[in-house]
Image (cartoon, rainbow over all chains, first blue to last red; front, side, top):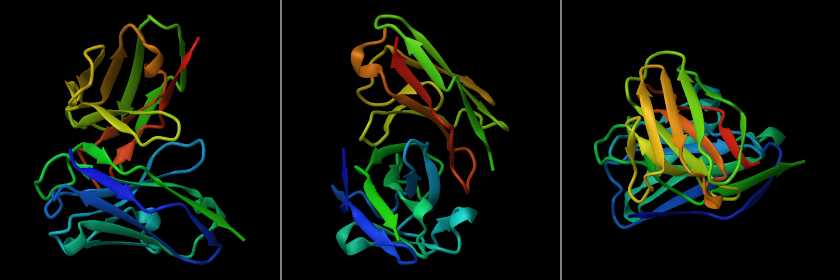
Amino acid sequence: QDQMVQSGTAVMRTGSSVKVSCKVSGGSFWNYAFSWMRQAPGQGLEWMGGIIPSIPTPKYSQKFQDRLTLSADESTSTTYLELSSLRSDDTAVYFCARGSEDSGSYLHPLDSWGQGTLVIVSS
Amino acid sequence: EIVMTQSPVTLSVSPGEGATLSCRASQSVGRSLAWYQQKPGQAPRLLIYGASTRATGIPARFSGSGSGTEFTLTLSSLQSEDFAVYYCHQYFSWPPLTFGGGTKVEIK
């Protein structure tokens, strides 16, 4: 099974931006749907948005529409999450995950997950 | 947005006993329902998809059932490694994909 490796812990200032990477090893990338979720301390999972590398337009949760940018680099099989205007309540672990089918659709369970990236936001 | 509601929030179970976890959707999701297990400091792991199909490598003591708006995850003969938080997830409709709030299965 492919592995997904995320970038390390990030400590950020309020108002700044953070960029988290998620590299897929194994070559299965182009037509899969990648979702990004976050998990605040002691809380559940929250879907933020998704990207299919073969389709130019990512999809975002309305909650993050104004601050979130997802991108993908086919040459390195890496997806990126960039969140701007950080606030203290953005402190969370951020996960990437891949849909189970190479179908160009988000409507599949998430069968491969990155290990998570802790983002700490402080003033 | 489809809201997923899990119950109970916490379940206290003795090792060797069984447990039943519930997940309710605010509207029908057909059988597009997955269950995940998450242990502290780890990413979620896919257990069940299509409401009742076990993912690769998942032991038979985990079973899922249901369709439409009502779903159940049954854990039989709980082992020490099964104490964790369990999440349901609908992938019938997006955006957004949505998760339940989780059920923590703890040792009694």
